Picture (spheres, rainbow, N blue to C red):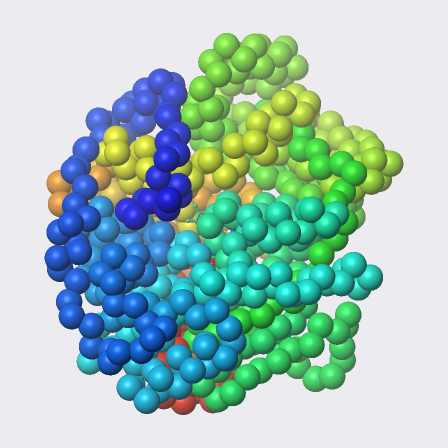
Length: 531
Ligand SMILES: Cc1cc2nc3c(=O)[nH]c(=O)nc-3n(C[C@H](O)[C@H](O)[C@H](O)COP(=O)(O)OP(=O)(O)OC[C@H]3O[C@@H](n4cnc5c(N)ncnc54)[C@H](O)[C@@H]3O)c2cc1C
């Protein structure tokens, strides 16, 4: 069963190795352990529903609680600290497009707000329930979870939009295909949610981001149904897929999604490479990204993240042996950067791609440690988010943020974000542990993914205030550096104040007009993306 106040399956627990405990104590001080707000108290506090009866709408308090949040840190603080205040008036789980349409008609008739709910893994407040007089309906896509059609000839598959990543891959793998979209939330996030937030997967360098995989589909809007056919390519005016991508539930409900699929590859290898310093490492991945070599992933950790990841991994003896090997080859313990480099495809191509890329890596003093680290990463990649639960139980909060900039700005932007985060907590006399990696590299630039950890405060209000201070400082640093406010998580409510800086007034009014056109009564997920 899914955990009601944290991440993932509630039978799963990921322990923090002793090295991780010691590191956090040393860097942040002893965690401030807080008791969780009990479920029973929440259930008692859920107000009477303002929606009239409808056969498809449940007003069960637990379901309403489960649909009142996503997985952002403010969502967690509200849930675990008991400060969450707003709940949907009802939850509907339609199982056909006609039922979705009927629910939109019903909400129109009763002036209700509708929040499309996919997997509920948003980390930027997409699912926050608005305050106000209008009743709120959470429209869960959970039961729209079927494979509708698979076309091996055209390499296309049509799914209902609420299907979760793990089920998409299960359907396709048994038939010899893959979608290959692996956000870290893969087990719990949905296809419709990926499209609506423009998500990016861990191996998107090979398979493509969701915008490359999204071939067409069906969007039920208050104005009618928008159908987008899956052309291989088209020059027939603006591409309507791009108004659906990143629409964050503002334009309507995606019910069907057609995706581009591929054959299961012969090889899917990830290698670990270490560099003596950030400058060598960053120059190496920039050279790789511009070399035209087909990678599946390049993920470069800065020195702070390398040190943290090795501590959190445990396996003290093996890591000490590896460090000894690296020392002999000129990689110091301090300042070293770890990089994961992946290749996917037929054996012959993978061999050539690996040879070409390793010759570039060697020119930049990279030292390969083979496939062990890469295999361990692949095995554990969906377990890592469970550490959020473990760390919270130890009295620490963890959050991440991300941007993308052109290569000339990568290092300075990363440094400015980390500096802004650390300095923001100085007036409170609290420490923050910050580290970053380049998660998706492109020939023109890279994304920067920053993680920060800090101690919980005595009250949820003060923990939230700490988060707000950090988030504001980091977002301002991103805007100042000329980065996008999000490379993959979307806008939601948390990034809304910074959107205009990159879209400009004409861009903002274009998006607003589009929302007004398809949703003239402003009923679809209001106040997300823009006010
Ligand atoms: C531990 C963790 C790891 C993550 N890792 C990644 C990562 O690697 N890459 C990445 O890109 N993101 C990542 N995320 C963020 C999140 O998983 C993505 O934003 C994901 O795409 C959200 O999908 P969802 O189905 O959970 O959508 P939800 O959270 O349910 O909804 C998100 C938004 O999409 C809208 N929406 C959902 N379904 C539909 C639909 N059918 N029609 C219209 N609108 C809809 C909602 O209204 C909402 O505005 C991570 C999150 C967590 C908690």
